[in-house]
Length: 630
Ligand SMILES: Nc1ncnc2c1ncn2[C@@H]1O[C@H](COP(=O)(O)OP(=O)(O)OP(=O)(O)O)[C@@H](O)[C@H]1O
Image (cartoon, rainbow, N blue to C red; front, top):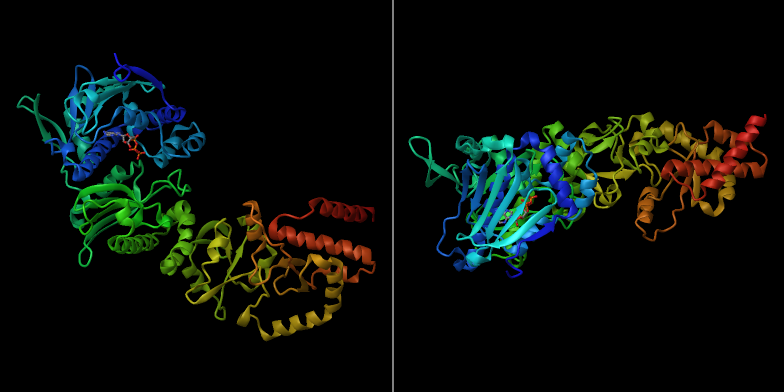
C-alpha cells in the first residue's frame, strides 16, 4: 500500500478539540442547526465549483446541475448530506477539517466560562460550522472527491470527535462531498423524511441551490428518485414584498453562519446606471475577532446570480467591517478577480452606494433606541474609525455617534450630538466635552464644576479611540466641539456681565498669590492663572487650546511613542478655603509644600498619575502629622 492510500490517524489541533466540546455541549438545545450549517457548506462548495468552472468548464465534467441531497439509511442509522460541489483533496480535508484558520481562536476559547448558557451565546460570535455535526452524531465520515481529480484520488476522513481523525484514500465515482452522520442513539428522529423536509423549509428555503430528498412512493417508501424540497431561488432575487422577516433572518444565518438573528437588514434592487441588488445585514453581536483588522470581511459577491467570491472587502470600508450580506451585480464581468475589482469604476460606485445604504440603515435603526444602543455597544467603537477613514460621510457618521453625558449622569453611551444640540442653552455656541481615562474620572473631574453650576451639558468621552476621533471631528451642525480641559474657558454669552466683572476683580486681587505660586512651581508649569471653571475644587490643571490632552499623551506613552512633555497651566480658585489658607501662609517653605500638594492633586485628578507619587505621599504624610499634632 502506498503512503497516499494508507490509513493515517491524526490528532486534532487543541483548538478544534475545545471547539468541538463546546459546540456539542452548548448548542445541544438548538441541535437541529447542524443541518443548516452542513447544507450551507454544501451550497458554498457548489458555488465555488460554479465559479471555478467559469474559467475551467472541464471541472463540471458534464454534470452541470449542482445540488445537495439528504440521504437517510435507517438501518445504518446515518444521515448523509451529499453534494456535487468543489470537493476536497486530501490536504484540503486535513487543513479544513482538522484545524481552525481563524487567528485569535485560542484566546477566544480561553474566555469561555464553562457555563453552557453563556458559552452558547459566545459560540455565535465564533460562527458555527462543520463541527456542529457532532451535536447529533457520535461519528462523522466525510467522503470527498475534488472536482477535476480522478475517482481513485478521493479521500475518506473520519472522526468520533474525540481528539483524533483518520484519513485514507478511497474510490468515489461522483465529484463532491458526502458528509455521513452516524446519529447518536437519541437522535434517530433526524432519519424521518418529514422532519428533514420541514427543517429544509425552515432553514434552507432560499439558498440558491436545490436541496433534494428521495421521492416517496404511494406507501411512503423512499424511491431512487429525488425531488427538490426547497424553493432554491436566491432570496435577494425575489421582490421585497414577498419576503417575510423569518426568511430574511434565516438567510442571514445561512450566509453568516451565525447562531443569532440579525439586528436589522436592508434589501435593495437598483436599476439605472449601475444595476445591482444588495442585501445587507447588521449582526446582533460582534464576532470575537472584530478587532483583528485583517480578518476576512465584506460581502458575498455575485455577478448575475453566479457566486464569485466570499469576503469581497472592496465594497465596504474597514470601519463597516461588521456588516454582512450579498451584492449581486449585473455590470461586472463574470471573470472578475480581486485585482480587477480593485480598479473598477463599478466597484467604486457600488462601494459608495453601499456605504450610504448601510449608514442609512443605521440611521433608521436609531429610531428604535433600545435596538440602536445594542448596536452601539457592540460596534460603536468600530464606527468611530469612520470619522478618520471616510471624510465624505463624516456628517452621517457623526449623527450616529453616542456618548455618555452629564445630562444622563450614567456611564451608558446614549446621547447623540443631535440630542445635545437640541438641549443647548440659548446662548451656548459650542458642544462641550471632557475626555478622560474612564467614566468615573470624567464624572468627578473638577473641570465640570462650572458647567454643573450653570446647567450646561458636557459629553464624557472615555474610549481609547475618542481623542483620535476628535482630531477628525471639529464640529457638528455648525457648532465647534470644545474640550473643557483645554485653553482658556470661554463660555461666551453664557457668562453674564456681572460674572465677568467679578472675575476681573478676583484676578486683580489674586495677582500677588499667582506670582508666588509661579515662583514656587517654577519650570513645572507653563502658566498660573485664576480659574473660571471651578466652584468646589481649589485648583486644576489645563492644557493649551491646541495641545494634546494629558489623557491623549498618556495613551501615546502607553503605546511606546515619544511624547512631548506636558507642561500644564495651573488654575487656582481663589475663593476656595484652601487657597485662602495658602495665601495667608507666611512661611515660604511651607507655602511651597502646600502648593506642591495642591498641584499634585490637580494632576492626579486630571490624569490619574504623578511623576513622583512617592514624594507626594511623603508631603501629604508630613501635613497629616502636623495636623494631628495640633
Ligand atoms: N461540503 C463541503 N465541500 C467542500 N468543502 C467543504 C465542505 N464542508 C466544509 N468544507 C471545507 O471545510 C471548511 C471548514 O468548514 P466549517 O463549516 O467548519 O467552517 P467555515 O464554513 O469555513 O466557517 P464558518 O462556518 O465559521 O463560517 C470550509 O471552509 C470548506 O473549505
